[in-house]
Amino acid sequence: MRATWHTLPLPRLKCEVLGSDSRKVPGPVDGDANGIAGCSPLGSKDDGGWVGSVASASFLEGERTSRTPPLGSWMFRKRPQPQRRILEVQRLLSLDSHRPDRGEMVYQGFLGAQHAILQAPLGPDLSGPALVAAVSNAGGFGFLRAPDQPRPDIVRQLIQSTRELTERPFGIGVVLHFDQDENIRMALEEKVTALWVFWGDFPEEKVDECHKCGVKVVHQIGSVEEAIKAAQAGVDAIVVQGIEAGGHVISQVGLLVLLPAVVDALRGYNVPIIAAGGIVDARGYVAALSLGAQGVCLGTRFVATVESCAHPLYKRKIVDARESDTEYTNLYGRGRWRAPHREEDVPRFSGKVPNFSTAGDVESMVMYASIGVGLIHEILPAASIVKGLVEGAQTIIQQQLGRFLDPSPCREGLTTMV
Image (cartoon, rainbow, N blue to C red; front, side, top):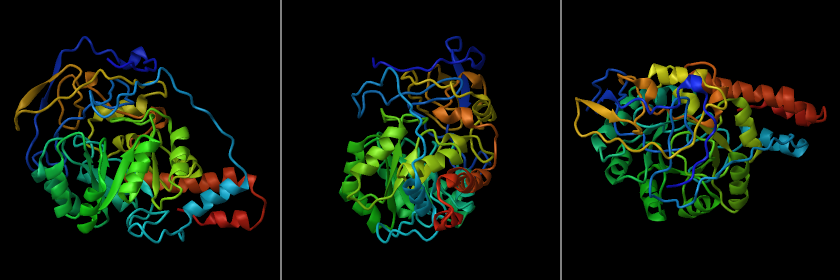
């Protein structure tokens, strides 16, 4: 039994679920039987980290970490650095910034996307073609999520359904803790723009295999050691996820410390770094850039969108939650489906999340969310999220951070934005 660190949940949000025994939800459906842009309640949202207002998530049990979660964590606020740091942010936001190798990565963009704003692969229950296409069409970069079981047919269906909705680049994510060989093979066969890998090793030979198929590799990490290993394997981008994140969380360190530590450790490598964990608005976007990231990845913020496959109650709980309404625990486990087209009892404390097709005692099910959930106040279209990040970053740099600059060409340069 691992020790866990909990924030104090509010009674009004009913974080205690001991009084509920089970919920009935449908099993997986082959094809687009639900009629909602290929969203299918496939697989399970297994264990994880920071969670939403009614339940929680945990580490994958018995897997790749033996470290004990801390009994507490520290978050320090820092004053903005003077002109040198402001100019660094200006460079990162410049439309002309360019990185010549690693697949022609661009600082302000990502693999052909207009902006370096990524939508995390939220899980088969949440991140469907409609959401991914909406993010990519808005200039960001959306990611599907492969099932946790070997289901190459579903992977193909998700990719093809997304291509019917967008001509922009997008990717698909896999959790390496599970058997993903067939799913990865299908992703390479379909030649998605990028493959997102997490919670496991992805050695150089596998990275090379992806590159031979024209697919870039994005590796999500939770420590400096993982980041160095991923960079040495030749991945095309590294997502640095702090402990503030929702869902599957492997990091033991807050993003404010982990991100600059990774940036420092990778100075000898030419690989873009993307920040993730608790980022939900333009303030987090600019803060991540100032700490050395070349872009940001948002998960929870995109759950509370019009296009998300999340259950309406799930979305509403995110919007209604306050900053203290999260809990970090290893209580919740895996819930596997045995047959399609059937109603199945979801055991209490299952890691299954409620999607649009869930019925029964939805409020007692696990709802993953980052610690930034208290900053989310509206359910918006995904395009509005991307637009708000871009325009908000411009406002922050020009109006708030700009006052730290001399009225010189430095300030004029701030007009070139994301």
